[in-house]
Image (cartoon, rainbow, N blue to C red):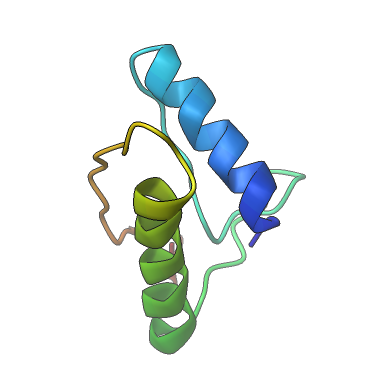
Length: 73
């Protein structure tokens, strides 16, 4: 997970540009590393909290868990 402030900036930029996709479980080199269920749930909760607490106005997001190359993102 990126730092909270960096992720808030990225989400706000997507919101200002009318959308985008952030994949958690993919490294900077575009390699799918995946996360286990507990870490993925924790990351999803953190992203939702960032959208509610760190961005004004609040950004409403859609989250989805994906299986890519037998890894969960």
